Length: 277
Ligand SMILES: CC(C)(COP(=O)(O)OP(=O)(O)OC[C@H]1O[C@@H](n2cnc3c(N)ncnc32)[C@H](O)[C@@H]1OP(=O)(O)O)[C@@H](O)C(=O)NCCC(=O)NCCS
Image (spheres, rainbow, N blue to C red):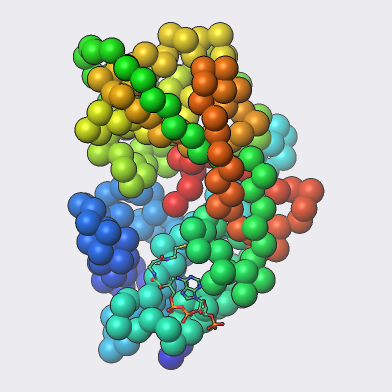
């Protein structure tokens, strides 16, 4: 069975296969195409699959990410949604798709693996010294929900992010509007110098970004945990946000998920949670 790079007519069936594995089988709702609006459009990501009778049975996406550091830019590709449909597992298909994609996509590749074994066998290396997660517990107080992230807010948020993160992945408007699993809607708390990007569900917050001048985090935090008794925190352990949260009793635990292929050691990056697929 050959690995093919899919053209537009195959994409709806490809998205349906990814949804079967990552959405339906995990008791989630909706479609990855709604959550990552930039991904399955022309120019969004390269999609590779093995087809059986014309339908994808195993595959992955490789999405270009423009990494920028001050005056320097380079392109890496993020690999995501590595899947094999249930009846086809254990026959080497995922390994074959990964191998073919790595041959056809130039430059460094990065992915987030909860099962590193599969990738390590294919030469991928774990490297994520700052990846961490944490949990806050407390009484968040009550109040009105924070505003939902809107395209009109993006220039202000982007300006804060550009000041705070000289090394970052460039984001289009569609990239900003990604909704990771677990986020029904993205909420925003902001002041001119800093912002928090988060979701809330059933009394629990998930913090995706706390960026900008730490002097203003005190003003933002009550909005993040409002109406909540716990918050899950996805952190870069070296970030201002992690330092600020440590001072408030949150202990970040290592959560090293990144794996890399063909990444020159000097250029390795930590990608923010919202930039991940
Ligand atoms: C993980 C998944 C893609 C593997 O697909 P597959 O086609 O069965 O994998 P392969 O047959 O190509 O296996 C490749 C190698 O990885 C190993 N492997 C397979 N599944 C694995 C797993 N869940 N954890 C660790 N290693 C695994 C296999 O043992 C095999 O090694 P071997 O050649 O030495 O025997 C498939 O189980 C799947 O779709 N799972 C749900 C989605 C998912 O979790 N994706 C990965 C997110 S990190």
